[in-house]
Length: 479
Image (spheres, rainbow, N blue to C red):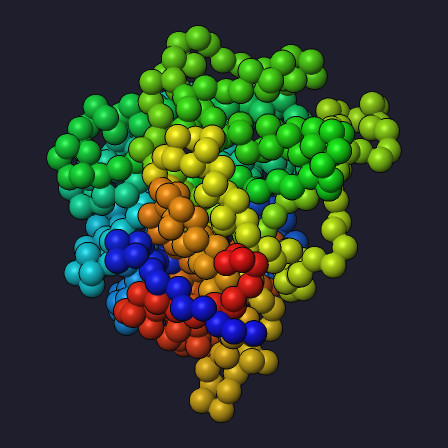
């Protein structure tokens, strides 16, 4: 098939991301500084692939200079990671800073800047302190919201002079969905109302931290912006029939608009309140809190986007003997003939980039945004090594090319998308899957002291960053 030349705008970010807990390891961690992920790993280690977890991860804590040198070699314009809340403080109630960990973050940020890589810092990427999870029920508690704001203030005071890209959460819907809605992760508690309370308190925490950010006047002082990184799934109905369309709307309401609307529009959708009331899962809230959310929307938003979500109207009755779940209104649709990543079990449908961009333009005021994560996880990548011991990940190059093609088509048509951050800079630990599926531009060789090796995709990414163009398939996107 004929290939098209795609041009990348000069000011379009091309970077990569990882999180603190998935890379740093436990080096220097005090016994009282476990995160929720550390606690889950300790309590339920057998479900983590081959036993790998956050204990060593990629050892970024000790090897960040080596990794940042690779970022410079690749030419990344931006690097997104998180500060590990559970590690940054020694006393969560009084926000007492752990100077050893905070100095490491200082050094890491400075090293990025010295190497021409702009740091993007997230305050929570599943790193809720374990102590707050066991003592208060985590984000079920309004007190934890206040402790998060105290933590954010210490972080802003420490690094606000250098960091210009701030985010409250990464994928704030995920942890409680796995634990309290679907009960597939430790401690396996099905509690839909608690799920909704976590959703709400993370929205409230975002607004309160935005309020703090404005009080600190960081935008005027440094040109910094603050946002949140969400993972709304582009949701397609099986058919144009009303019952299938309603199923998609219901999924979208519970999982996407629950975060998009308050963060960007400053309010929750009225139909959501009606459904929460109907099913007795209304989150505990006050009018003052809703006012804080209304008056403190984000500057921009990061979107994590990997695959489409396809639903249809239910084909069987809901079992009313079990607690309410949004799936009362929909079920998954397994579309015949779809292109799959067989390793991860996810559909590959690059048009999601264009459709998400169109939605943000038309429904959310064309707010500034960027792709905060997109990538392809593949198992046993060593089988693709060539004679020079380099992984020939042409499948990843094709995946990125096709998704970037659709995204840049939307930018050409006026979408206010400012960049693309690949997941991930390096292979890293994922919940349960550990190192099973590899996402990185950089290979982490577990059998060889976690040494780093650039994959073919790293050299390709370096080239398109430098040349601001690439080639992609000439298919329906341009017809």
